[in-house]
Amino acid sequence: MNQVYLAEFIQYLCLIPAAAICFLPMKNQLKYSAKTTAGIAAGGITSLSLAGIFSTLSLGVNGDLVFFAVIIMCFVFYYRMVKCGLGEKLAIFFLAIALLSFMSDYAITVDAWIHPTENRSDSCVMATGVQLIFSVSLTLLLAHLLLKYGCRLVDQLFHARVWYVMIPAPLIFSAGNYVIQPRDYSHLYFGNMFFLYLFVLSGMFLLMLIIYVSFYFVAMELIQSLDQRERIQLMQMQEHQYIAQQTYIEESSRIRHDFRQSAITMLNLAEQNDVEALKDYLQSFVADLPQNEIRAWCRNLSVNALLNYYETLLEMYGVRRQWEISLSDCKISDNDLCSMLGNLLENVYHGCLTAKESERFHHFSVLLKNERDLYIVSSNSFDDEVRKKDGKYASSRKDGSGIGLSSIRITAEKYNGTARFSHDDKVFYIDVVMEV
Image 1 (tube, rainbow, N blue to C red):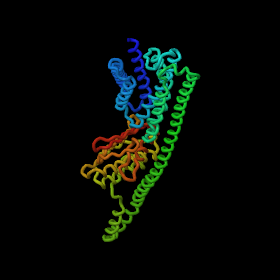
Image 2 (image 1 turned 180 degrees about the vertical axis):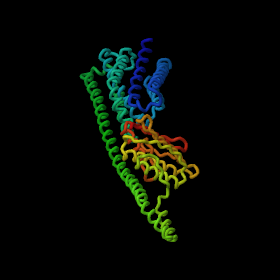
Image 3 (image 1 turned 45 degrees about the vertical axis):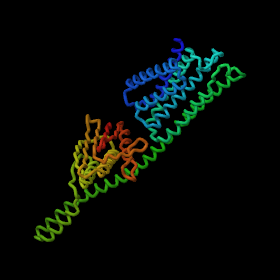
Image 4 (image 1 turned 90 degrees about the horizontal axis):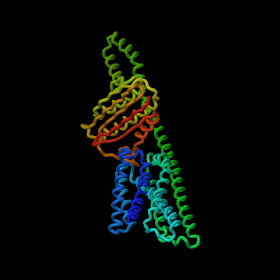
């Protein structure tokens, strides 16, 4: 009797390598630390295993049904412990089940070779032990690939439909492995049935590996294609933004350049006591002046012009501002810096417009610390209506795509930094840190 319990327990232990296969690609998507996640997973699997063994051996419930119920409960735990979308969770979870189903069938092959007169329902410590060894070995072989390439897919492939497309494949292979399992090992000894079974099983395993390798390369091509299209859109936006900034700078420079000539003209009119002509000239001069006061936020002329432009824009729409700019010379190119700040302030502008005028505000800090780290922190009001597409924030405008936030992220990563976007109630947060 102890042998039966031990065999069942070892079989449930195979859920541990299955859990490892599930969590390794989710390294960057864990809600808790790796140690906490491992502890919760181990505790959950142990509890479910004991409950499953008790249901099967003490209550007489069908073992396959109990194991199926345990797998469902495992997915519930898994679902609550990772942050990515449902499509990714299902695709990775079913992949783990499919891989371990192959190891189960290979273990049955070994058991049938050694015990040809037994059947699958016989609880054998050796059979379940072989299954556990095969499962652990496969997990160790795939660990590096799952950490490197699996993580890359989960972190970069945000299209849920692509993940959902991959769900049927592991389900089909898992079902196929269950169907072809010999219930009575003696059936494998009719003619060449044993080697045919092994050939079919290995062929299915190889086919699944080919499908997933192909999926990886197709997915990476899709990611690169989308990134390329995104970068083209970013370049177009940057060009438009650059033209607007240059126009503002040139207009301000022209007015400052003409001021000396205007002062000479006004002096001549005053010396001639031509008061009416002087009034007319002053009215014309004032009309040509910029509507806002040009403030010296920093020594970078391009950034200064950009900040003055958006300060005027936000002022026009009643946005209360609290800005702190401390930006000295840095190695970030003017184009990249203006692109990032412009996209950020453009997002702030459109976000504030969605809020009630009395609630519009923007808190903004650009600080250079330790002469190497640039911190950009922004929080602005909005109407609390969040749109997301493929896990990313999308623009609240009908014609917008949220490409500006992607531009901020790409620029931050270019300088070994990070950009994080979040919201809470009616406040949208942008936090950027970069090496300069």
